[in-house]
Length: 253
Image (cartoon, rainbow, N blue to C red; front, side):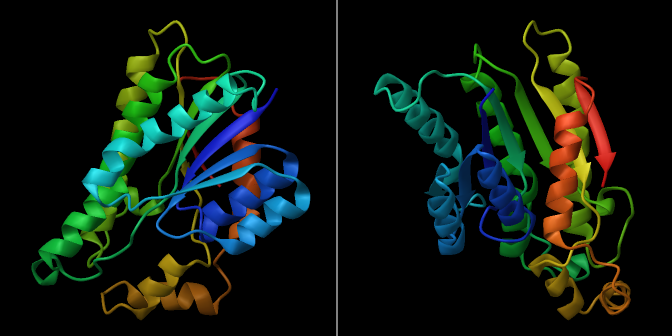
């Protein structure tokens, strides 16, 4: 059965590596991010893969409110035009995009940074999930939402209060939506995944910060404790495919 993955934050890090592996395996990938990846486009072209990119700033409420409709309308139009055989197969939303900034004690964080982080880390996944569930009602295939969380959702870190609280909120939101879906005839499965610490731009930002936990991130890099995003993507795909078909699943890679 065909699979369609809608992935936020597709231009780098885990989202980029996940998209590469999915394209390589023949899945359709729809990428949502502020910037496109020419490397990803070329990857899809060389392999005959299906990759569609939509430019969107998910921290901007005006852009966020309409992007899921744009994506689903485009899929429906392709079916009507005969480009796609049917509106079916598994469809998955991967809420991966996130910002670790602002990295500072809360009284020194700029209001604009706080707002942008909250919008990207929690408002975006909430709104995208809401529209995804509504717009895919009656979809001929399984529907899943994978919310990329963090160990920071459970461990308070001074200087990272905005990031920690937004990831904690994402976990609780996921559990609530899963509880709502349990009584549905065609429930959307919800997965929360903590990929662990990866060697990404977010980790680089954390190492450049000046917070009480900065030495911890520097030490993790020096000791080789950061996972390769490609390896994390491989584990994530395995977790998605072999997880029990429960309404809610929470795993750490």
